[in-house]
Amino acid sequence: MDIPIPYLEYFGLTEKPFGLTPDPHFYFETETHREALAHLRFLLGQKEGFALIYGDVGLGKTTLSRIFLSSLDRDMYNTALILNPIMDEREFLVAILKELGLEAKGATKRELFDGLQRFLLEEHRNGRETVLAIDEAQLLSNELLELIRILSNIETEKEKMLRIVLLGQPELVQKLKEPQVRYLSQRITVTYRLKPFSEREIGLYINYRLVKAGSKGFPDFKKNAVRRIFRASRGCPRLVNILSDRCMLALYSRSKESVDKQIVDDVLAEENTPFASIDGDAPSTRGYRVVVLSLIGLVLILFAAFFANLIGYW
Ligand SMILES: Nc1ncnc2c1ncn2[C@@H]1O[C@H](COP(=O)(O)OP(=O)(O)O)[C@@H](O)[C@H]1O
Ligand SMILES: [Mg+2]
Image (cartoon, rainbow, N blue to C red):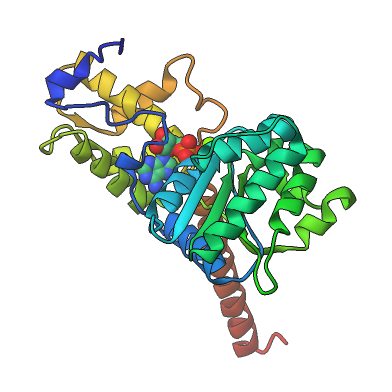
């Protein structure tokens, strides 16, 4: 049974706007997700190769994998999504077969592999390609990475049969540099790092989620609240969701209608927030300030040099 959420009725919402599950129903296209999707679509046009999408926890990798696979035309593509690849080779093959809607017949790894190979070749002959996406790929063992390489080698004379997308945290990139997996790494043709959302996108994102959850413009998040949320979350949607949800609760308990900076600050000051260590300026703002200060410094030096020249100092 779902735990009742106290504020839904108060705000006239039909569902929780800031959940933590990667629900495609709430998908909001930001620049980084648009770019990532463009990279993945590019992979489909290739005759072979892997795509690698990486980014910090909570930036939307699982969401992206679901959106990408569900955007594919069912008449042209079979899709399989492995969400947690902590398994042995046999379990991995069974999981792929199940995702493809096949019965995992055969007791041995070899039989399972052969079954998958037959399916891929037959589907290819019928004009359908198969896309396999593996989430949390930083958890893949070297044995599985090797199996994935072998799977990716299933081919006709002209084409590989399986398009593979690896999604994972940044340590995946390190892992792929290890010598044992270099044969797989050499085949990665598309790489993209997910970026944090911008302040503007976060404002739109919060609003979009509220509307999706049934809001008719209430509550609203003031501009200064969005700025505060942007800075505290550093553009990470998972943290935006946690923070926005707590703001909604605070608003409800105070019987107010809009989230302003004060409410966000109060929520940030609460105990047990995951924000204590990350509160502060967003890196992009800091970078911007460094550039502005350097430019001011440069202008001052040029002025000094100009006047020194005028009074014949040099
Ligand atoms: N583009 C997006 N649109 C809507 N919600 C998103 C988007 N990106 C991330 N989220 C939300 O942020 C949270 C973290 O996303 P998730 O896909 O689980 O990240 P990751 O897999 O990178 O850890 C989830 O609640 C998800 O719904
Ligand atoms: Mg994830």
